[in-house]
Image 1: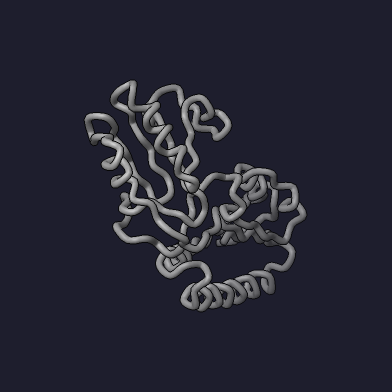
Image 2: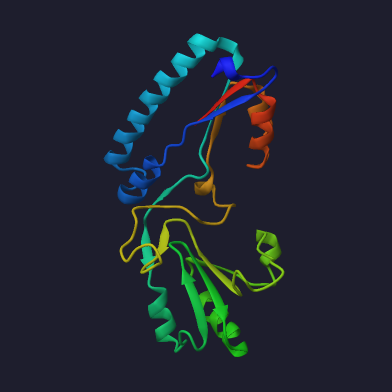
Length: 216
């Protein structure tokens, strides 16, 4: 690789670990299965970093980060049963897309929006985002392509059934950004890591680091 590297060219090597997320969804982030696999990831990462830092010393930048965290499953809500209980018809009144922690609803009739807000306002584990408060969550899209109403659960809760599963996952994510359980982490061997304010800043960080950057 180094023989083909041009002068002043930066090299970014990315290692992506996706099985950890899958195991956490399946067994929960506090499970023995998750802890066991996390230790194996830690051991592999130690071997990898030891090798590169030994051979390249201070010419390598290290960035280790996650895009989110996970929270243990607490309980679930059957949103389809709620629609049925209050006489909200699919697809005549609404067209919903039910994610694990978020329901996106396309409203087909004008009088249904008020009814939906009234119904979900009574459920303490639900947060409602309409066009009126969408700006605060960066969901103020110019059209209704992404839905008219967003119903987001509080951490630990999930919709069952949903698009992905008919049974609850034991590890969950996909809540509001303000929820602390959503926060990921970032570790690095550069002081630039301390200056990050947003995930968008990671791109600039990679460009400004050493000639070679390992991303895990």
